[in-house]
Structure formats: C-alpha cells, structure tokens
Image (cartoon, rainbow over all chains, first blue to last red; front, side, top):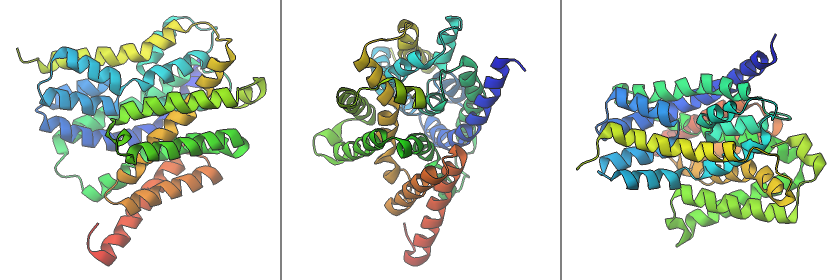
Length: 241
Length: 108
C-alpha cells in the first residue's frame, strides 16, 4: 500500500473521535446560529469554511450585533491568534520532502484538535495524516451545525451537557501521556493549567477574552520553558511535539 | 450599510485561513535557533493545557460534573492514553455525576 494512503487511513482513525466531539459542540453552535438569523445552509457553509469553534461563535455574535467587516476581521484575528502559534509549530513538524502546496492545504485543517493529534504523531508529519483527520472530523462539525439549526429544540439538554466535555478529554489525552515520561512536560502542563486558572479568576486578567488569555499564556509559559529547559536533540526526537 | 451575512462569513473565513496559513507557508526552512525550536516544542502542551483548564469546569451544567469529567479524563489519559476512551469516559463521568446530583438535590 502506498505510504500516503497508510497515513491517510491513520489520520481518518484519529479524526473519528474528534468528529463525534465536534458534532456535540457544533450542535450548540447551530442553535446559536439560528438565533442570529442564519439559515441551515449558511450555517453549514460557515462551519465548512471556518472549521473553528470560538471563531464561529464570535462570527455569529458579530453578525447578530451588526458589526462592520473590519471589526469582524479584527475579531477573528484576535480570537484565532493561537492558530498562528500552532501553525508555526506544525511548520517544523511537517515533512520537508513533500511539495510546498501541501502547506496551503494543511492550513485549512489547523484546529485545536487536529493540531493536537498531528503533533502527537511520532517523528515527522505526513500531510496525508492531517488530511485523513480532516476527512472524518470536519463532516461531524458541519453536520452538527446544520442539525443544531434544524433540530436544536428537541435534543435533551443533559446529553448535550455530557458531550460538551468530549473535546477537553481529547486535549488531556494529548498532554498527559507524554507527562509520564518527562517531568519537564508534566511541570509545563501543571503550571499552564494553574496559570490559566489564576488568569481566569483574577480581577483584571479575568476580563480578558478566552482567545487573548490563551495566546498570552502560551507565549509566556512556552517562552519560560524554552529559556529554562531548552530542548536538546533527544527529547525532541522522542516526543517530536 | 448593514453588512451582508454571506459576505461577512466570507470575510471572517478568509481571516481565519490567513492566520492558519501564514506561519506554515512562511516558515519553510528548519529553524536552527535553539530558543525558537524549544518554544515551538512547548506550544502544544501549553496551549492545550490552558484551553482545557479551568474551562472544563464551567463547560457542563454544574461545577461538580465538570470536575468529575476532568478528573476521570486525566486518570484514563494517564493509565490508558487512548483518545477515544478518554473522551467517552469524561462524558460518562459528567452524565453520571449530574444524574446523582439531580437525584439527591433535585437541581443542578
């Protein structure tokens, strides 16, 4: 079997749980989209084109509040700024022997979750792994949004509440296993969560939006960790995250 | 002029795409600077941790169910590590906790 096909199938498998979690989150997104006056078709288009949770909630708000185009662009820039860092990390992870065009295609699939599984791949990243993950995750996102618009009223609330932690569980499944073998990573994960909690509940910092908080802390904590514990050859090779 | 909804969606989708595409396409060469390499190495761990906590505690209908989802997910991730089992475990923990809380207090 061709190498790219093997990677694509591996990516598809990783994308399935993501797609299920996406479905639940997108469902609530669809309910909000309907509230803002978007049709099922528009909402489906939005989810297919943006593939971003916080970004789409912000988009719905912007449309509902009648914001101008410039304000919309700036809002999306701020809310999604973390993708700048993730895309930067991916730029070093992706295989260099593949045609340049792949980087433009991969950019579409840089979401928190697809980024998470892509960085979890051992060694360098084959573009087709990411495509495979997108192929099973994105349909869940789009379908969930459309279903939310159409059927938002009849879904039991208890089930929605339970499903809303699925994506967080996925993040934990990415950051915790490497923490077992590396005390430094374990420390970075612990400090990140503690700092995030402090920021969220602090009087002044608590007023920051989630997007801004994520980017500030990511830059601060990653920067500190890089200064104190520069990554040498070995650990980087092993985790290649 | 009130912005058109379809045009708004296009403008925002284009902005998001640019944020995602610029680093991937501009940082083509392997970065040799040790600090930047290390920085990018830590980015996924930090960003995912920051996004998870404490947001997970307020993602469900009650603090306690969010907390149980977090703890159960952390334990399964430590012991097992499988993405799918961690997620499903967290969902079940939330559902069970909310059922129990509802049973005893009648409200969440």
